[in-house]
Image 1 (cartoon, rainbow, N blue to C red):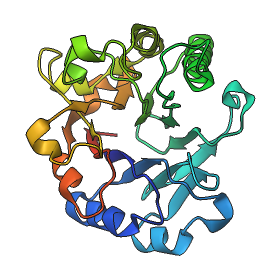
Image 2: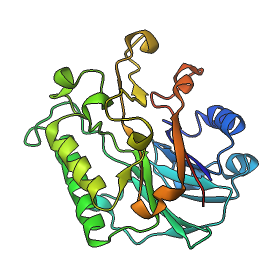
Image 3: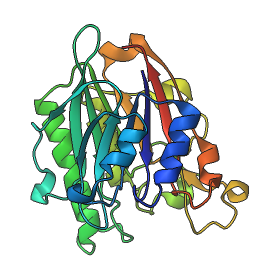
Image 4: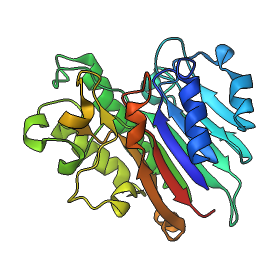
Length: 264
């Protein structure tokens, strides 16, 4: 099974890029974040034409939104809480039919957190920390098995997940209150499989700001997009790829896709 996770930054705007992604990399499942489309306007026909006959999504107008698109049969799941009680379309989950029993797939879009890394002064940062605290507690109380968690988690936890650990320690997405929380969340039953493929000693990014005119030359990236798996699936994990070339596509997202291949 080939799975791709991608913050598309507007599904309707970038439908042609999604079609190109599907044509070039033939995923069985695509997990999207920041779809920015309410459920009643979700482009069902266009998605079906790409071969994804099974879909589960949750969206709203103008921002947020998550979707799982699948060629395989899936069963939508709605057993997790409405995180922070906001009903803001940041999580969707399903069960994938597979040999050995279903595999649970979570697709998350964690709040970005704004600009000021002080929860007393910045409600967006306070919300982000509370969101990760709540997800961490939930997975602690519901230990995952045969599970995959992907998405734009908006945190680059390791030193080599950012272009400059020293300069970004005070910048939201790499502050210690965020990184320690994300590592605690992952430790509740998951393994960071991207770092099983690319060692933590090496730089690894999935996002480059629109503010950088030549993103490739400056290469001031961050790894904000993640793929986690439970240990019971690791023997079936076959590797991953960060699709850097997507950042050079016409009218790109500031995120690129991440492929994960797994035998299920």
